Length: 82
Image (cartoon, rainbow, N blue to C red; front, side, top):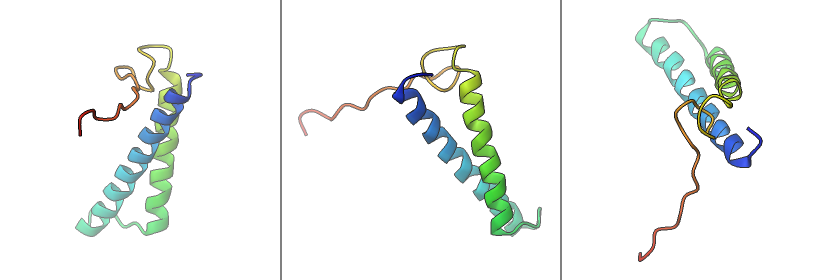
C-alpha cells in the first residue's frame, strides 16, 4: 500500500469503476428503469469510485502487492523488436 504502483493501480480501478457506474446509471435511465440526471449519475459514480479506493486499501495486506486480492500491479515494458 505504500508504493506508487499500488496507488496508480488503485486510481485506475477507481476511474474504471466511476465510468462503469455512470454508464450504468445513464443506461438505466435510457431504458426507463431509473430516473436520473447527469448530476445524480456522477454522484453514483463518485460514490462507487470512493468505495473502490476503500476496498483497495482494506484489502492491501491480504493478497499480493496490488490493490485487489488477486492482482499485482506490474510495469509495462516496451515491446522489443517493433
